[in-house]
Image 1 (spheres, helix red, strand yellow):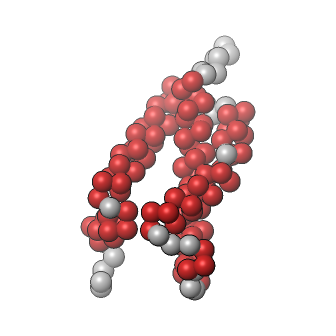
Image 2: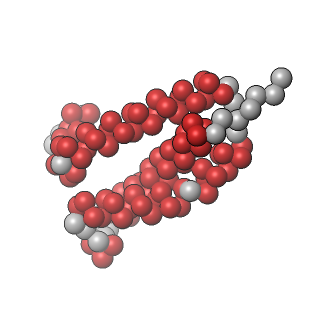
Length: 118
């Protein structure tokens, strides 16, 4: 692998997760992103109360992402072999935390809308 291209990354992720699971995750991420943008445009501001609750969910999302990846790839924490493994694991945790925060904020905004003040 001489060049790192988008097609190469898709092939690697399809190999890791399987085609069906990978594209399902991509579709869910796209839907949540579209709903998040819809909520931001609709409300025209962010609710700090909802944002705080979303931030409080971040550690659970980080842990869930790490456990999910370990389950899907049949790996364990004892399999960490070097610094790059730690970096990848921290990246997975960071993406899981951010994704969970966006998901929680979006779900809260869709379930209970903040009343607008004049």
